[in-house]
Figure 1 (cartoon, rainbow over the protein chains, first blue to last red):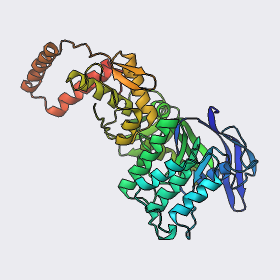
Figure 2: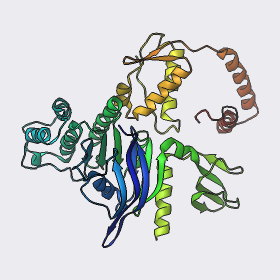
Figure 3: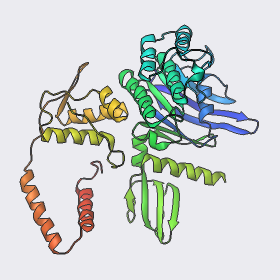
Figure 4: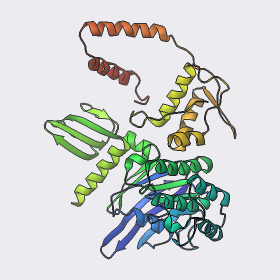
Length: 281
Length: 127
């Protein structure tokens, strides 16, 4: 096992209409549950597709579990669950699982079938007749049946009801607890990721705006509240004023004169996303 | 065995909540030396938090001498925490609060005072 699950150096994806990814350099340590956060079109899916080998970058490098993707097919120890939940609509769930067993070396059939049973999805049902939530559960079972070292989930919770969201999270978390698998998880709902993710990768306009250990990042930032007359410290990410009061999110230790608070993951992420948007505008 | 509960709005880090709840259960006698703490997988399944957070909490409990990890088996309670003179301290605090009340301080003001002193004296201990 490598200690770095994903290692990107100046990774760039250029499309005719603009940048998909631009000079992205980041590392995701193994064993982490990482949140991939960014607005639509920030490059989240592009990043996952390049790592899987479904798409090739314009320039730069990425190593997935120590290997460049694409050379020997998708990395054996990587599983990817895309937004479109790729399943054959005409197949029954049982046939999907058998295809999974055929196509994947190291397939754990017992485990994959247990996940499907836990989701209350009938094995005889045609995939095309399943609800969005059920399809996600089957696709997750097939992704996890590979017993991956790294799993990338693109918006896995998007079409799930609250109970299914929780169950999907539990499946992923239990696997992490048992095997130390690395997870990269993208979501629009930052609240879903709070407490779950211990690593953050924030993209905007194809660029990495913030990355690192969540707890470190939170302790390195402050939400400062005080009079707007006060001098701003270095490292301001976003400053807002209302009347005489200023609210500032900055990368700084405690600043005297201000009311200092540690931000929540959501406050931190939103401040970076908003400031990226203002620069772009 | 106890079951943990995570309050995501409290602002207290999740690992600190696990440590606090274990200490609390020990004080109340809900956990006794020799009892097993829930496995990481069990905690994760009931709370939806990161397994590394649970490991961090258990390491902290081990560091404090309250728990002990047995390889391949789980984490067990090793000792009850030393009971400080909680009654005496509480009586002093009660006296102080009576004075605050007599002086006409309202609840929010008292809470702000207490919080300020807590922040001052317990710096770095998970606010």
